[in-house]
Length: 97
Image (cartoon, rainbow, N blue to C red; front, side, top):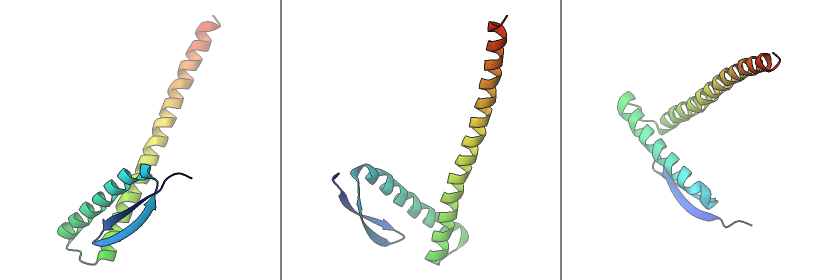
C-alpha cells in the first residue's frame, strides 16, 4: 500500500484534517488557497457575510469553470477531427491519382 500523508487544510477559517497520497498535496493546498481568495473577493465585492452563501458561490464558480473547459475541449476536438478528416480526404484523393 502506498504511503499516505496526513495534512490539515484551512478553508473558510475551518481546519480539515485529511489523509491523502503525497501526490495530491500540492493540488489540494493550491485549491484551498484559491477558495480562500475567492471567499475574500466575494465578501468584499458583494457584501456577503454568510459563509454558506459564499461557499455556494465558490462552488458554482469552480463548477462552471470545469464545465466551460469541458465544452471548450469538446469544441476543439470536433474542430481537430474535421480538419483531420479533410486532410485524410485530400491524401486519399492525391494517392489514388
